[in-house]
Amino acid sequence: MTETTQQTETQGKALHAQAAACAAIVERVGQCFVGKRGVIKKLLAGSLAGGHVLFEDYPGLGKTLLVKAFGKTIGADYKRVQFTPDILPSDILGTKVWDQSTKTFRLTQGPVFTNVLLADEINRSPPKTQSALLESMEERQVTIDGETLRLPDPFFVLATQNPIEQEGTYPLPEAQMDRFGLRLSTGYPDTLQHEGEILARRVFWKKDDPTETLKPVLTLAQFRGLRQAVENEVFIHEEVIFYIAKLVRAMREHPMIEVGPSPRGSLALLKVGRAMAMMTGRDFVIPDDVKMFAVDALAHRCILKVEHVLEGATAERVVREVVEATPPPSRYRADE
Image (cartoon, rainbow, N blue to C red):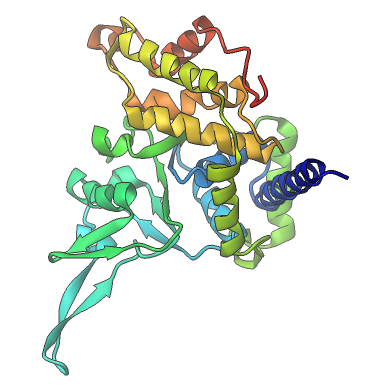
């Protein structure tokens, strides 16, 4: 057996192990969150890509349950913040308090110092508090009274929000929306069978929160290893990169779009495409990996012109039209 053959077999085994670990995460989360395996996979891909994920949907559809189950499954330290109209930035980031015994100011860390921050109903708080997360989401650090502190690795925000037409909500600032790698929606159960299974499992669990006894399927160090594999071991052809650039460029130039996706959106699409490739056991990105995330990565970064909003148009529809109109590349492997 040649050295090249041995190396290929080793890489193949590693890819299989990585894909198996991702499948185990999806399966374990699926024990709590019935159906919607596609949503679970997209959440995992967004996290492996190092991005933050925003869930937008109506109350009671399992957004918080999904996020809690995911945090426990990957063996991460996670904390939950319930956003309310009276919550302050210091309630999230922390503050310095006077310690009478030492006659000095002592730092009290807020819940942002964790691996997974569940920001529940993030748009229930005013913009000032929402903006407290901007630095931490972009630079993985916070500044408290002039002192800059690094956050744990990994760190990502999994936020839930109710649609902005709901009473008592505040639209997220565009700068913060742009920092979310993906915006997903759980939606109602797909079938009558799934609806019945949700009720049946509740009877079996005998409690409303089944995540209390959920066991992780891997350690945090192993999860970091998966993220490093996405970054270092998944090939993306220059034509696929150019395909992503064409999609984003077409969105900016679309006649219905007032403000198009930023380069941060292009990077998010590239990263989740590589994550999905690894999750399916491939070491290269195909156009379908990009297509399946186009709406989730780009739509929330777009602002439609007012006249088209009044006509009922949506950014999601525009993204789908652009994807349909943009021919995918035919070359995507390293040997092509």
